[in-house]
Image 1 (cartoon, one colour):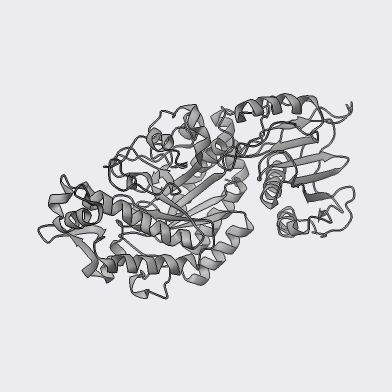
Image 2: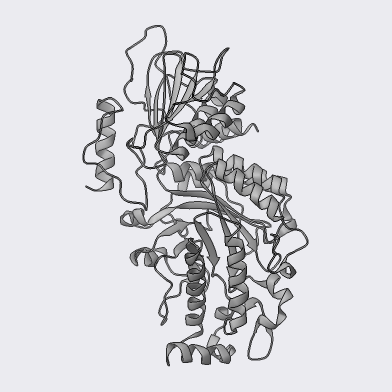
Length: 533
């Protein structure tokens, strides 16, 4: 049964039966995209879940960002912390202790562990057999209590975010039942700390904001031409003066894990290695005239691969997440009109390794594959920028390397449909909407939350046109990206303020890409209120 048909069936079935009723033949669509919970919007509630109570009006959905995908209203006072209120966890859900304790601190009430639930409490539990994807959850409020149920810990955590926001926006968790799940499994923020150093505290603040928006990834681009920003034990000579210590990174990673956010590190290569090459000038790529190519490593020199692989292995030991970003973009050797004439040594090596038709692009592609093999052996899923996937060569990028699609403008960039037609998994970082580039160089303009909210969806991978809907299952999600090309254009505080509404809009559309029920003025006012700004 198709995912789209299943969603229609779920929407009808859940409006007609109790929420606990099984949905029969509607299974998920696989790991690429967990099923979101289809539902009426906050202004189009489903039927009540409890008997009518004439003393209270029918409840409305909690005001949250992103908006909950379904709320079944009921009549009753709802729930809010009062004298004697506690946060407890169900006896069989002890692994939710961290989520429960955090919520208790945020609400200013005691955390009572697995104490028996009583009137006035909020309880967290798990139901691994519940309908919906792995990050799905429900929030049931009635009888003076609220119950948060997650498919796993992340789902329960997102339920606590809904409770926190409901109390902040409306003072009460509404009576009835919220049933919620994300449309896409990868949802995040990426920050370029290589060109502009950011403090650990600044990064931690962004992690907390991202978690409240139910984002689950944080990209950390920490190596580029302008800087290498994390302490190194194997190659301290490449590290910039302004950098994060490994102790600070471990603190960041611990916080991210507690917020169910995966940190995705990136050491970009074979381009964007200027900071590393400053310490290793002999590994710089030189053209036929002997001029060094900015940021480009000589991929024909075995020492180049050894150096980068040593760094990859070192930082894989620091970052424990599932993904690793290899970069692969903007290798300047390939921007020349005739790379083979400009770099005859690389051209000869390409023919030696890949036959008479071998090209410099084949060497660059093989470089990405070789680095992918290194991180794959360390248990990571490799990612690379889309303009590192060249067409028409003897070598193609390995099929398991996830495409991070950002542009159709760079040399070598291809329309997104080509990657999708090849069956490749794609993550959306569309530079038309999702790129916040400091100083607005090269025709970039600061993205607005309104454009994202009103125009963009995860299917809009390039420019303003969506790809055909038949490819939607291969689009894993999206990340909003902060690039610091002109590092002095904004202070860290200005960056934080500037990305707040665009990030909130991105979070809304990657959680539920349907046309939102709230207008932009309503949404932006809510987002500001929830952020306390």
